[in-house]
Amino acid sequence: MRNKLNMAGGHPIPRERNMPKATGSKTTLSLIKADVGSIAGHQVVHPQVMDAARANLKEAKSLGVIEDFYVTSAGDDMELIMTHRKGEDNRQVHELAWLTFEKATKVAKDLHLYGAGQDLLADAFSGNVRGMGPGSAEIEMVERPSEPVAIFMMDKTEPGAFNLPIFRMFGDPFNSAGLVIDTAMHMGFRFEVWDIKEHRRIFLNCPEEMYDLLMFLGAKGRYVIKRVYARSDKVPQDEPVACVSTDKLSQIAGKYVGKDDPVALVRAQSGLPGMGEILEAWSWPFLVSGWNRGSHNGPVMVVGEKNNRTSRFDGPPRCFGLGFQVTNAHLILPPVDLFDDPAFEPARKQAAEIADYMRRHGPFEPHRLPMDEMEYTTMPELMEKHKGKWESVK
Ligand code: F6R
Ligand code: MG
Ligand code: MG
Image (cartoon, rainbow, N blue to C red):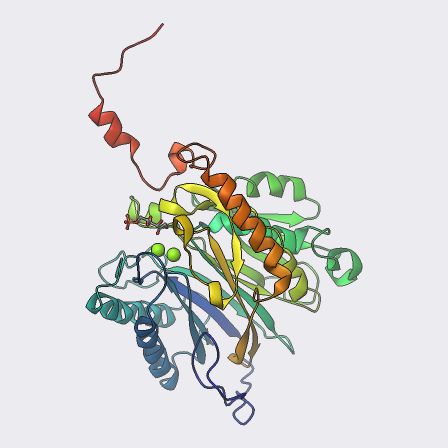
């Protein structure tokens, strides 16, 4: 059984006999993702599109560009999980992802899939996928003796959707018992927060600056957690223990091109939140922006592989999670399907109930987003259509 295809990524795992060799250099975990087209509307990535991506990454692995990879999806987004030794923002690795998306797009176009190539906003690769449409989250690390990592992939929402769960993992003692019980966590964590409108960032220490931090994080459409750092000596202090993709498609393209559908990498255990604490942060369905037409508030529904796609009203927004061990820059397979557990049924049920409640508001706020946060810019057209009909009132 252990050498069978894994459940979502689909490549064989003869790891026991073929353990990756340690080289001593740092490991980089890169997740680069894009929506390059899907079946039956904005729903799921087609298996042939995934196969095209796997074939390309397999070749890159054989050429030594990357050490290992795992291709999966979250709803209509294809997710390239890669390990290598080239560091963050590496040109070769980003170009590989871009070319992989281009090859996958070709298959999507041949099949006339919906929105084929939609996230590839540039005509050609130029140095880095950032600002070109795909989203990316990367961590360069000195691997600990054992390196468990959770990877979260969301569909139909925006980067700020990670603010609440990541804060709860690393900042909230009612979520993460380790913040109280494990003295290695008592120093707390350092949050790197990006202002995605002004393109600037700030570092805030938790717990002492927690209230300031929450003031920013609550405004999740503008301030987003980019990285988290440990403040103890369990992990080098300049090395992220969590990283979120913060690419804002609508700002890149200047018009609506779909939601960002963010991803996050979170390292676990040994002085960091344990995997159970990382998952605890998802135990109730908080509200996020996105859902249908990127213009509605709705609950996040955490899902296992089986329900890893949106349905009702193009949602509700989903989060799919996989747990890996990173070993000598390789991914030990199969990953764990993190939300495939009855313990999350109440959260899913509650999300469905909240979805019902929110839907009954129809086109009214706060279900529909405020005008300046909607991904559709309907108002200018309406204003043009009705211009001249407005009368002044005293
Ligand atoms: C949201 C999303 C969908 C589409 C909607 C309309 O991120 O992908 O809700 O916005 O299905 O799609 P089009 O305009 O392509 O028909
Ligand atoms: Mg999409
Ligand atoms: Mg999507």
